[in-house]
Image 1 (tube, helix red, strand yellow):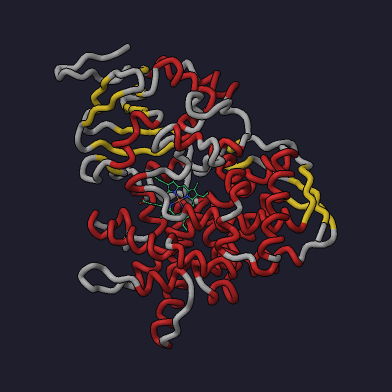
Image 2: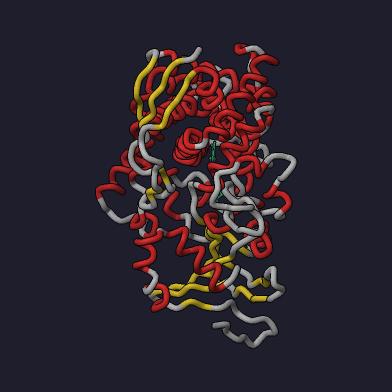
Length: 460
Ligand code: HEM
């Protein structure tokens, strides 16, 4: 049903609560992605779903999401929907601060994490961590890949982002505290971040202790004048436009947010990449052959940032795993100023002020006129000769969001996952023992459900 409006553009078609409740059995039977896709097929790329008095307008596909991603924060923003991050990271940053300060802090993040010169300096540390981790594995055995990758990524993160003090002396405690911070995030704390539930209390205690540990590191570096090569140091050295330095409180909150933003996203993606690769022998063979070519060119111990950039096949394998398994299934914004969208079919809709809008990454990444046979794991679709996401237009591929609030850690995330998988492909033969994992939607980042047992055998 399309609703009329007094202005010359219509409001989007709406799906009412009864129709949504009727979908519940289908959700249990087919799963959320399939039901979302059915809604897209039935109602099109723009529609409003209303339930219990709350409405949310869905925007699907690159034709209608440009403003969602690029609009000014004064016109469309996260609003107060990210309030749940304040008790996780502290009041010093992001949603605890005004917009101008937030934008400056975003610049600090980009300069501290994303710049190629930063990534270049991370490569050798990542390689050291990965080589040392796998040197402790035997000649052959069985491991839960999900558990192993989560720990390894946290070791890399603690060294590259948090610095050697944490990596060398406090890794286990800090790792546990980040776990508790994450466990405090669920549907209830997302909606009511300050409820005195046991999970919220543990989250608060974890943030306080993390803040204490990291503040000590920052203060001790400042006192001794010691300068390290890590993201924490970059944030300490960042300056606001007016020349002011970042405070200890801000540095600590920024680094906690960065670690948290990259932790689950990267570890789930590396696990999904493994599950997909090990289920597709032809793709796996192509990825191994690429490693052979690159190691012949660079020799094993000379792998550097450029050599990882050259791993196009592996890059596409990760990108395709992320297309099919985006850790954030949907992104949301609040509309502060109404805007219009034009669909592929040429219909115009007005999205009114105060509406909540969402774009379901899950559906965006599976649109059949952009992605050929979207249900098939086909990394080659991203190779320069096909470039399906680029042909489809900006915002066809939304696993990292895009535009104004696009991911600050994309290049870093690819790099660390490539370093790990490149090592696997060069040194081990792996066989998937567990069935291909289902998705666990109950967590804030969609993750592979259960264990992922893999048999490994050393080849080098
Ligand atoms: C595979 C790994 C990753 C995925 C899939 C991912 C995904 C995303 C997505 C979808 C957004 C946009 C959120 C929105 O528009 O509401 C985002 C934002 C962000 N990500 Fe990532 N991320 C990953 C890794 C990382 C890493 C490793 C870091 C840091 C080292 C990081 C830091 C951030 C930050 C700071 C933002 C906020 C940007 C802003 O609001 O301006 N991410 N990420």
